Image 1 (spheres, one colour):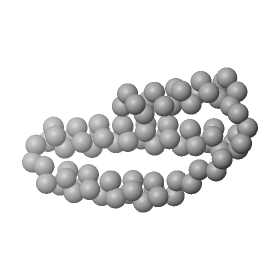
Image 2 (cartoon, helix red, strand yellow):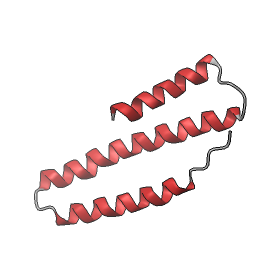
Image 3 (cartoon, rainbow, N blue to C red):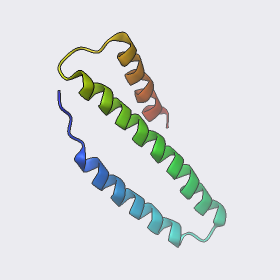
Image 4 (cartoon, rainbow, N blue to C red):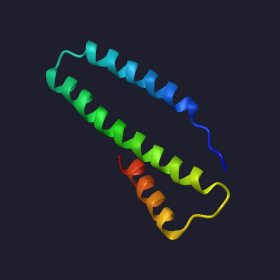
Amino acid sequence: MKIIFEDFSRRENELIIKISHLTCILKDTNSKRHINLGFSNRFSMLKIARDKMIQIIQARSDNSLDCEEASWLNYYLTLTILI
């Protein structure tokens, strides 16, 4: 199974631009810090988890996952849900 995710990069860039515009509008320093740090951390974790899931799935092609790969996928999926 080949998964194509080129559209994600474009959408991620659009989201980052929108967040930076929002940060410019805000007056409160704590709000700016929260958006800059909190959003950046969560966004990075989601991106890393997604990339790792794609690597595992694409490496297996049409073969079934072994127990370790399935466990890692479960871990990364849990990260994306909890965040």
